[in-house]
Amino acid sequence: MPFHHDVDSLSAGMSDLALLDFLTSPDLPVAKHGIKRRDAELDPLMLAAVYSSGPQVTRNHYAHDFFPAVGDPQAEGAYDWTKWQPENSKTVDSQRRPRLKYVSRQEPRSQRLRKQGLEVAHEKVRCMARTRVPTPHGPVFLHLYHNNRDNKEHLAIVVDPAQFEANSPNHAPAIRSRSLDAVWNENETEMDRITRGAYVGRLSSTSQHASSPSPPSSQSHPPTRSLPNNIPSPLIRLHSECFTGETIGSMRCDCGEQLDEAIRQISQPITLPALSPSSLTPTTTIPGRGAVIYLRQEGRGIGLLSKIRAYNLQDMGHDTVTANLMLGHKADERGYEVAAAILRDLGLGGKEGGESVRVLTNNPDKMDALKKEGIRVVERVPMVPRSWQCRQHDVVGNEQGEGKSGEARKAGATMIGGGSVYGEDLDKYLRTKVLRMGHMLPLVGGSEENDL
Ligand SMILES: Nc1nc2c(ncn2[C@@H]2O[C@H](COP(=O)(O)OP(=O)(O)OP(=O)(O)O)[C@@H](O)[C@H]2O)c(=O)[nH]1
Image 1 (cartoon, rainbow, N blue to C red):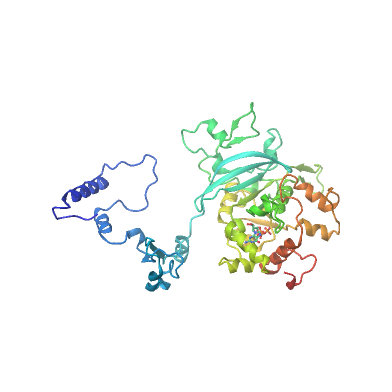
Image 2: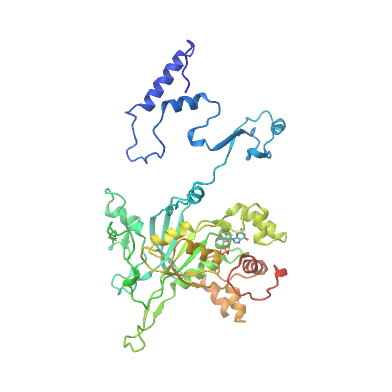
């Protein structure tokens, strides 16, 4: 904000000063529940300096480079000042208004902190709502999460039907979200809590019981030591969104089938072995327990737009890995930090308490990521594609639902793509996962690399 000394701009100068005065006055109204700014209070000298210096560079931008990329986003160097040539500007349509571009020389904050040896704080998640959803495999609780890392709404599909039975014996701890059960503010009514899903048992017009939050002193879930040791760890899957496979039944991949299969397997009743061979207690069966963490990272994290383009490259003969690389992406751009935070919130696999988990996957990256996040995994459970299971058993199913693949097709009755997926595209896709991405799955029906 410049300070004017000439007579012509006196009035403008006065109003600038009045504005400056207002902005920096101690009585500046502060939003009641506003989040505190991380930077220092407004500094009048800094404001004046910023206003009078050409490009709008503030102290928050000191590590970025500004340069006139002359409004041509196609020009080489438009986003990279090291490549920018002044001649580029001559070719630009003079009608278009030049825009200021900048590139950052800074790495993302998380990487800078890691380099300095500083631990990056865990991702924070909060379950915003939870509800009952009946599925062909039984009822599940759908949880919707917000987080501080991206602005996507990740989901957790929790299978724990024992929670519906108010009077059932408590064989295993309920899989519940700690952030959902917490009291969010003192004005929250019991009805607010119930409406967002913080209730126990099954809701009905006559039964509505809000859950009680865990005592604030213990920030963790109860330790596993208190559990009977014949209960297997809950089965979980980290599943990445796939619009094509799950919504329109694409047979290029087995994502829809995997989602259905994961919910089916987790929902299978568990027969508990007797605590000791000499035990007189009869074996008990308890309902299945676990969760699918559904992550909004479409196309292995490259997004639907790039995935659609990648499919065209795949039709031209490239495999999924090469197609991603040709588009300037990595073979796999997914991250599992938010998933780990959701698991911890549900009391699954966390270091500070709760239960260890079994993981449904063939993907070594997921196992490594969970280990890095400190999630306690006791077992990896393979996911064998249904079409490969059928071939392994040499049983051919038919549309009427006979045979193994018929059974599988019935399993996903209400989910497009949830049945058994098969075909040439899928075989190629699956073999690429095994041969190029190290998936831990025995190949079925031709393992030659040139089959890809
Ligand atoms: N880029 C790309 N992504 C794909 C393609 N087909 C499926 N996907 C995405 O891949 C993700 C599923 O990943 P997969 O590698 O099949 O399975 P995974 O979940 O890593 O491994 P598992 O746990 O063993 O099933 C979803 O986000 C899909 O959208 C493809 O051809 N190209």
